Length: 217
Image (cartoon, rainbow, N blue to C red):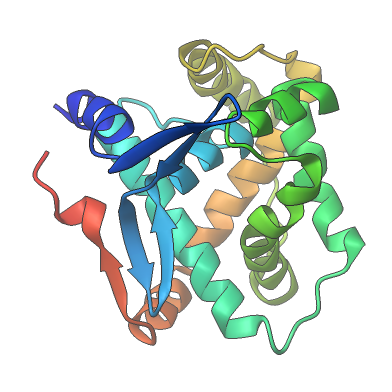
């Protein structure tokens, strides 16, 4: 069972833990490697808590973690591919930072979430820059005019957003507040479906080792 795997990963298999000044410092397991860049289990945990990720219908815990890890791999590849070509501005960070705050409920709640990983608000920007780059590349090069009907947004809110918030013990925002986040999420999914070939081609150009995917369920 993957839940058992996660308990083991978080409690025992996270190799080493020590207490320093009342804080628990943990040496992570590596979940994936892209060239020489690593993605850890804590990166996945942080992404699940901080990013506006949503569980798909009938998606179990293992599949959710694998999907989020795959997204983190794509973000890292986009960053490695375009970091010397595209300079990110403060304006590029604003949409994702706003979505993160809206998901959590307030800036203070985001700060509280970050504290679980011994991070501050200032630490958030380096953590999210790979996703910011990925979204900028999609927007500038591949984003198409896609209209998301409101009933589809409402259905997503009721069937996916609310259950996930409850499972993570996070406060649920109102439908009105979540409309722009869900609309952007659904538009991004449709865009990614149209550019899946680009993602596959990009991944082939890098040495990707998905260790979590290779583990037995």
